[in-house]
Length: 371
Ligand SMILES: Cc1ncc(COP(=O)(O)O)c(C=O)c1O
Image 1 (cartoon, rainbow, N blue to C red):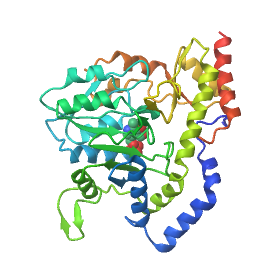
Image 2: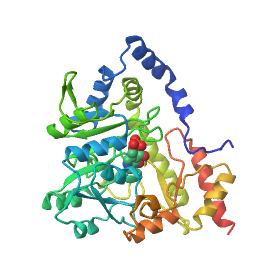
Image 3: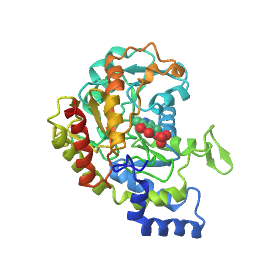
């Protein structure tokens, strides 16, 4: 089915950038610069400078970025790492892949982010790190989190896969903790043409560890100093990301504009809960990776929207800790469980036209007015 308002529109973004992307690809192929060349270095420099941190490391995806950050923080078997259940599975999987034990806490009703009031209660002598997940383009309250983390000597790895460019109290999300991690999966704010990721840090040792881990622990071609992975950002991919990176500030502004249109259009509906509006709290600068509603009769609304040409996403109809194969059932997290039944993502990307956004709003309104 061809949607009037598709959930993503990769071809449209490519058409808008075609000349620059084609020329970047051609240049890389003609130079034969495929692995860890200038384009990766340029990307890393730009990312670090955008975030206001000392180092960035281009990686193959956002999951390895979290794994490398945790490993660089010394996380391993016997350690506990605290994060949330209301996130993409990779935030939790990364902990397990390090041999550590995930400890999950609940999120707030208001913005679906880690409830800092719950954090201190689950800290034990085994707790080594905490992963705040900046979900949907909004940063966590990093003041509260850093206060608690410092008090208990915990490493902070910020999962910033969904919040590149977000700020808390004017400071870039991703620049607070020991390290922060990014995903450039195509649907992300800065979307690649496949899988890609990065790690950012102010800590030289973490940086050096990440450089080793992404390239089989090879310090030089003849000196292998630890067991590593194939975790490098492809140079060709970096060249494409470099083209897109220049558009990022404009894209973020456009996402905030679209969030404002949704906000005005939907705020009089009692049946939906909206995410915080773009200017609702001056401490938070949200980049709206996703526009996520809490909706009464969520599944019926989803069906109605699809039938009317608005493509939506219900990412996690089952709370992560209720996914049988993950063996996390012991956690009781009422807000996360409720959100799994209520949340629905509407289309959100800079290429959407105002007409498409208004059409999506009208459809939501029509669903509820039909009773
Ligand atoms: C919150 C969060 N963390 C981690 C990841 C993992 O990133 P990747 O898919 O690039 O491995 C994602 C990707 O969607 C994510 O949304």
